[in-house]
Image 1 (cartoon, helix red, strand yellow):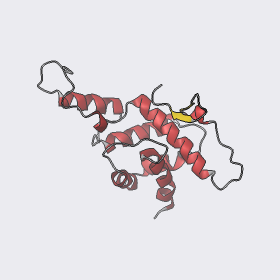
Image 2 (cartoon, helix red, strand yellow):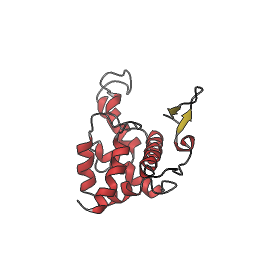
Image 3 (cartoon, one colour):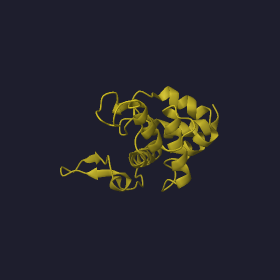
Image 4 (cartoon, one colour):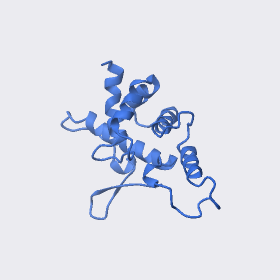
Length: 162
């Protein structure tokens, strides 16, 4: 297995669902892995996740395009456009778009752009933890700076929306 792909797998794992990040319902890791194997830009981006302090705009765009492709929209680069198209398709030919919610399985929709950004930051934080796991005293950023909340009981809770 090429080094670039090996380095990207940790990013893909955290991004597509691990114990501390959410997943893309019904998409599975195998499909995501096959997509990763076939695209150098995806490999480069997922191998950088968790190694830098911030996620660049360019990396975020590659991630967003990856998610569009995960939802079978190869020509799209915006998850919000994929969501819009899926809703329009569900209500095509029906009187009044969004007149009722029948036919829309929200679990099969990609996250909106805002939620995708939050997911990416949480995945980045998880990768930083994994990469520092061999250190006795890892220098990790604060969880609340990586889209987590401190609960009133002192535990961590996911920040789902901005």
